[in-house]
Amino acid sequence: MFKFHEDRLPTCGVCGLKAISQGEIDRHQRKVHLKEKNVACPICNYQCYDNAQLKKHMIRHKVDKVYSCRFCKKTFPRPTTCRIHEMIHTGEKNKVCELCNASFVQKASLNYHMMKHHPDHV
Image (cartoon, rainbow, N blue to C red):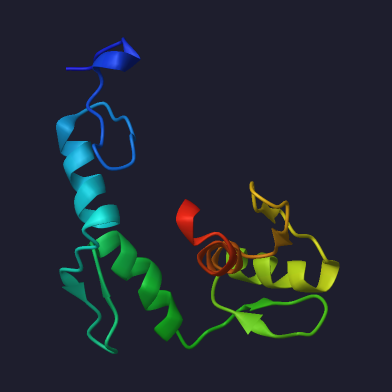
């Protein structure tokens, strides 16, 4: 049953995320905080939480890389990956550290920055 008052929504005890059901909170905790990896790729050693993540991963094994960078012609299996790569060429950096305003193209770079320069805020 959906509850309309935010203070009554099930909440993650670790990070404070609110969801519409306790099941959503349980899935969130298993995936994000416990980092459960119950599904394995049949081709490589990659393991993930669920079949949705595995489906995204399987594109890596796809031979056809049909999306090409406008600048260096490097090819990618996903249009979003190609667009993110192109940001390296354009200088667009939309991932910004809230603590020091350093900016990055990729979220992974921001995460690395956080671990290295602001470990108490991770």
